[in-house]
Length: 86
Image (cartoon, rainbow, N blue to C red; front, side, top):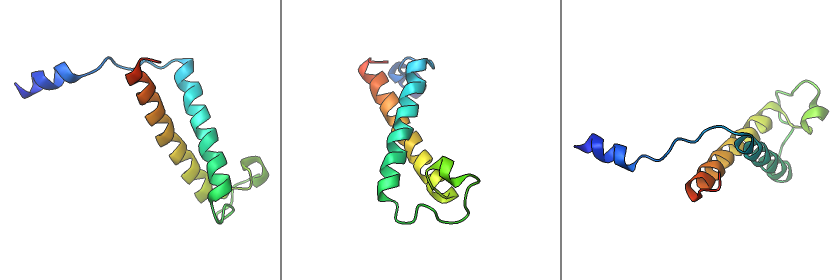
């Protein structure tokens, strides 16, 4: 009985589309811009090869901003899907 309740509450699956990809890219850009202005030591060790290509970020800052960008992107994508915009 509990399984049928869960199945009834399930929503339609979200298919990947270019809009979903673009939304994730934009969320990561926003997160990197936010991290660039707020991280106290963005160039902490270990460094990245060609650090100027990565905006002067070290590995910890790059991982932190992209992880935050993915969380932000998933929330945005799921929210837009729930609202029927995607």
